[in-house]
Amino acid sequence: MKIKKQFYIWLACLAVAASVLAGCTSNADGSANRKTIRIGYQKGDLFHITKSYGALTKRLKEMGYKVKWKQFQDGSALVEALNAGSIDYGRTGDVPPISAQASGSDIVYVGAGNSKAEGSGILVSKNSSIQSPADLKGKKVAFSKGSSSHYLVVKALQKAGLTLDDITPVYLDPAEGRIAFEKGNVDAWVVWDPYTASAEVNTGVKMLVSGEGLTTDRDFIISVKSYAKSHTKVTNAILEETENAMEWATKHKDQLAANLAKDLKMDKKTMELAVSRRNFGVSKMSADVIKEQQSITNLFYKLKIIPKKVNVQDAVLK
Figure 1 (spheres, helix red, strand yellow):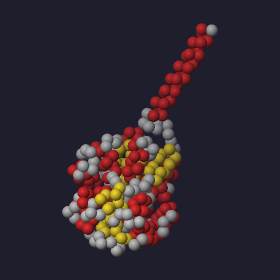
Figure 2: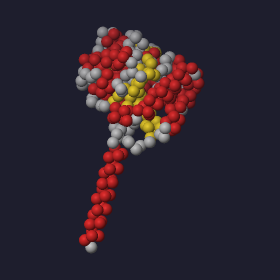
Figure 3: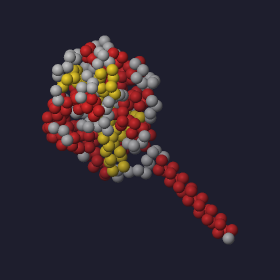
Figure 4: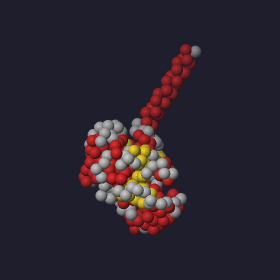
């Protein structure tokens, strides 16, 4: 009887040990045994185009991985998902990675896109009395907090001799911003393509200023350092296939506009405008791009938009 009891105790201990070991194995890098790569994207961005192109999904499948795509309204929400472990890679604009790094997040830059400043801007009604950024003083301006639009507003106001204290910021994501703008609840709306193109084509708005001359407004592919480093082949495949998709996009803008119009359920004229003013491309982080990001970091720290100054180089994937 005593031997039988000891035997059952031994079995129970063995089961517990196996459970602990299994847990350690599955959580070693957040998802050691998971064979699904989760990628976050936004409407019409480089990952959306890569998704539509299809080569990345095919390549990762050949490597033994399944791809799960998740769409987000803005970069801030995407970074939150990355920090929470809900996605493994994502695409954002210039500011979200800076805010994430300043808050202590372990994000890394995997790659950088070309400038898309022409399609980002400050929108006002065609009959608005606002004729220049200087006229924004005392006005309600909607934009997504911690996004590339946040930086664009800061730079436009700065050039006009104003600061954020001279306007009333209304922090809204793109969908909420459009509703508020169309209802007249805000005087201006700062956003990026395809939202800017849709508003220009379908409603009575004008672009007060674009991002040209104010910001490069790049795409950035980001991940979490531990995940990207433990999945080097996947990281390289994502960057390479995104580069290939961007090359295809440059040579097939008409087809791309048609594809995105169908996928996003937007009219073709909107997507043709958005695609026509986009310079497609992506590559590894260069010294010039790192310098650009550092200048944004320095300004946001000076303005107390981020809690501490950080070194962008520290977050570049090596």
